[in-house]
Length: 89
View 1 (tube, rainbow, N blue to C red):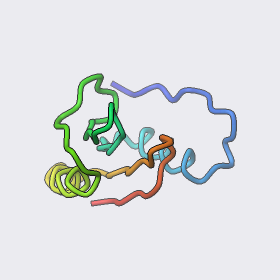
View 2: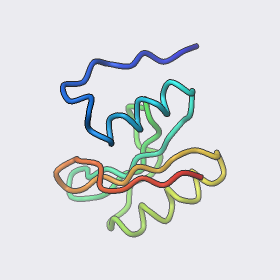
View 3: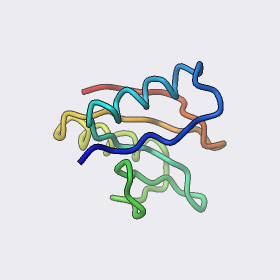
View 4: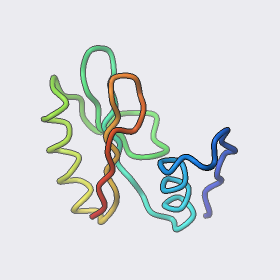
């Protein structure tokens, strides 16, 4: 099944370009996102979090392990929700 890429406003944004390319290639990814004063690790396309942590550091460490095991990418978001960093495994 091929994932559908949603239209974005600024296609020149490097973060959006890299994310779109990863989806096109069928790569899965993990996202560290803020949620209700905590930090969650979510798989792309999932509505539920894999795990929830008190700190971003703990969430990143867990996300790195999951991304390494699944040979995917890890996107770390800031409190505002913007992508802060990206790591490929």
